[in-house]
Length: 60
Image (cartoon, rainbow, N blue to C red; front, side):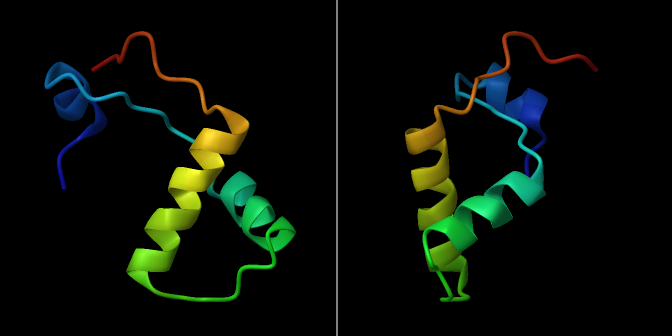
């Protein structure tokens, strides 16, 4: 898995979010499906709905 700084250098928008916030969001959406695909969709919805802030700069 590439590091956040590598992804940022490649032009991707990167956010680092506390997993407990995503878990709370999951509960609020009544999501009980446990699969990589469902988790990825839920995280994408979390970022869209809560407008996760992109990191302006990433330290080493």
